[in-house]
Length: 360
Ligand SMILES: *Cc1c(COP(=O)(O)O)cnc(C)c1O
Image 1 (cartoon, protein in one colour):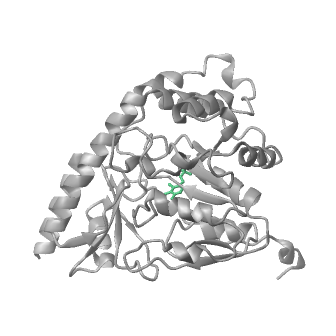
Image 2 (cartoon, protein in one colour):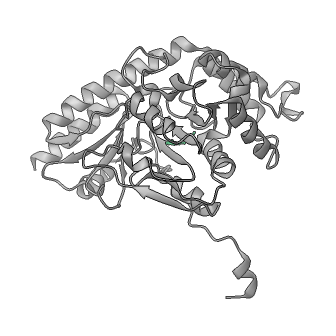
Image 3 (tube, protein in one colour):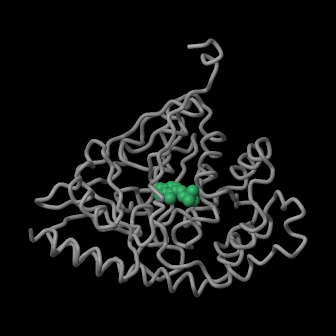
């Protein structure tokens, strides 16, 4: 190896779900929303004629920060915005996990966590989910340099009750605990209201708690790249210090405008969530009849295994039929498929394909 290569920061990158180029596929592999974003977003995007694009955007992203703060009834000083929650999470790893002690996260979880830890040379330990794919609280009582987990967890869809989340935050007050709530809006309950088990309900009580959410799933804006964090003013100040040391203008003007319009259209948000939850119930029922089993999902996907047919085989057969779902060739979960909840029509096509396939 030439000597300069010894000096390169070498990383094994995250592998995102496929974004296939072929048309006429049913795409149920990356948990996108099957519905378009609020029609108000389209109107807000018409900023090409205006002065907006000639100038740098507001580095503080005040319009969007204020809209989010108002929606979640917190102070603007408690909100941080980034280019998708991946950006917010990467920035949070860099900011909060600097102790040199190992951070903790589940063995089966969002597969970006170990990538960021490796990128920033943060030591980490994973804690095994139990056989029901639940995060075991006592595993997180050990000495650590910080904690992160998604709630609901990905790719399992399993939701941790708020009391258990609070227990982890309370017992780890000397480190930052990050709850990645990419899917929390899909929890059962009143559509569009703060879900009962969201750690947003704990904000104001724990200075060490950071809640991260995204516009990519529940607000149908994966293509726009908007994520945010809510926490104590102190945490948010530290995050901003790191962000401004990196790139002041991470959020582009169109994303800011789209984000504000999406947050403000609360009725549309609630309506789409209601539809997706209804489709989830129907799909669960149909899959159960076909011999699939799964945990109760509180997200916009199902994590399923079949009593007879291996997941790997089903994944290939579905693909052949232009229905793309996600398969993880990893220990413990290599007999499961993660299926995004699409429209009713898409799920009907999926179910009828499976019904025929499983009859053979
Ligand atoms: C989708 C997802 C994210 C990232 O979403 P962005 O599109 O970057 O906002 C983060 N965490 C989990 C668990 C996810 O599933």
